[in-house]
Amino acid sequence: MHPRLLKTFLAVARTRNFTRAAEEVHLAQSSVSDQIQSLEAELGAALFIRSRSSLELTAAGEALRPYAEEILAIGNEARAAVEAVLGAAVGTVTIGALETIASMKLPQWLPAFQRDHPDIDLRVKVAGSGDLLRKLEVGEIDVAFCFDRGDVDERLAKRVISTEPMILITPPTREASSKTSGLAAPASMSFVATEIGCVYRHLFDKAFEAAGTAVPKLAAEVGSIGTIARLVAAGTGSSLVPRFAIADALHRGELDEMPWPGPMRTASLVMIWRRKRVQPQALKLLLAVASTGFASAKSADVRPRHAVSSPL
Image 1 (tube, one colour):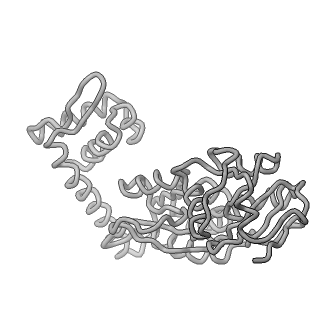
Image 2 (cartoon, rainbow, N blue to C red):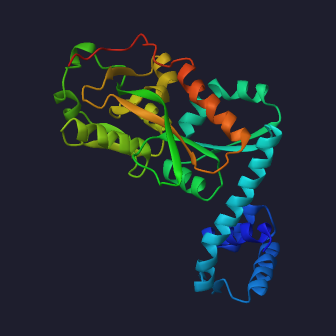
């Protein structure tokens, strides 16, 4: 079984669609169909049940899937072992990151990594936290940068690379005298938050849970931190966000801020990667640089002129 055929098989198994699988493996749809037929002929078994409306794995296809994943993983590890012997830092590293991390954090250290290691090709894919983990598990990315949501699969390794302050942001027209301390003020505010399922919504809900108070009324649910910042600046409500994600808007004076008065005042930013017997040298280098790069990157926590303290 040629690895190329197994890679195509796994793409079809994941997407349940020949067209989407063709886009994923960069082939024409007819080539994907031909490869699946070749693999089925080689194994003497149908791998998919095809109909007009669906595409499902057969029992034989389900049996093949874990072996296909392991064969491809072993092939990658064998290549990494040879590169390690040669001391070669070459190849491609595909990074996955939340949009705000990709735009605000990666540029602070990734260009220097590229200059120091010109033989390593870097790719960056932006996605939500759930999609990042899925891409990591199936090998679409090599490392994910996101916020910690708890334990990960035992096949994955995780390292905290920074802790980010959580702050309350409010419209800039609010007077400092109106900002009372304690949880009574946040509990009475209207908030703007991301949608359920987003990691930022997870942080929002966990912060109120840790503070022992109910999540307040939501003025709006939106799809991104950037939209939250614009809505809060326009007076729609307040929000609770990692500070770095709206640092530019704070610097421009478009928002006021207060420290979050609950016990959960920071969020852990983590990098997650697959455990392997032999890690590719290029990935090992990036993991090492990322560990120090996030910690030493220029802080976005210098308080702007509109910052307001909130005593506990």
